[in-house]
Length: 353
Image (cartoon, rainbow, N blue to C red):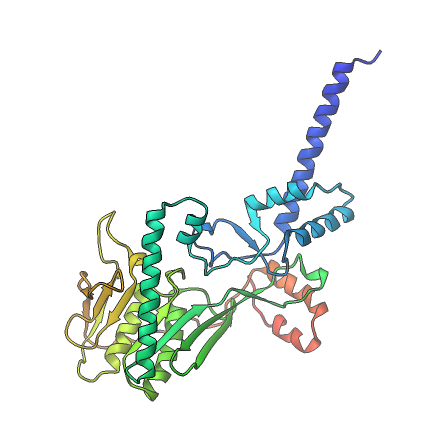
């Protein structure tokens, strides 16, 4: 006679083992999906983001079911897979321009008083920007905005065979003239440059040189405060802009370098992310001023610069194209089957390690 208790325990363990096996398969599926680097995600950078070829959770679950069918595995429900995906990845490209303070307020993680102060600062910024734009229209200066577009991928195809392949990341850094609507776009992929301060500093200085030659007036630049500090508030681009301010004025032949643009030294002192405006002047020993709010007066940088005997010369950042991982190179070779033949040489010439 069969013992009901033993039978119940056996089936319970079998169901538990099957559940764990299905979850392991689900994790393997997510691990195999191509991800984007989370350079644009701020405080959520620990999360992985899928390439933008997956546009919805429904599409993601359909891909999962197709994999299960090929592997003769029963798929878990959409609710289970969606819950799992929230922990490890996102099915959408990160919206890098979202302000983390506004997002935190919407989810109830910061007080209303803190958000109201932040909102007031946003209004101050818009007012200051509009004033600068009007001055530029009256030939009183040059006003630019700079921004990094959300990451793109190549090749970009909707064929099902590309879903599980990693691709090249492509970036577009733009410098836009608010006065005459001219724009310079610096497109580069991961074999040409990295997302480091020197790359963005080189782009900014290159764009401003064109402007200063045609219209040698003061230059004001706006960038998104949500942008990572390697794109705006860092000592590399600060020194480069300071050097540009001095090199375009014959009145001062001295050149100064800053080791840091942090305004304080203590644990609770303001950091570079608290800066809202930085000014470079080509006159006197102190060339660097800052503001924490646009309504404040300019303050001198408290850190003393070190004097250079001559103007600094910069070495070329890269001597050869950058290499990608061998696994990504293999995927790109496989993707050539859905690309025109005249594009194949580009992927063949990419180096790998």
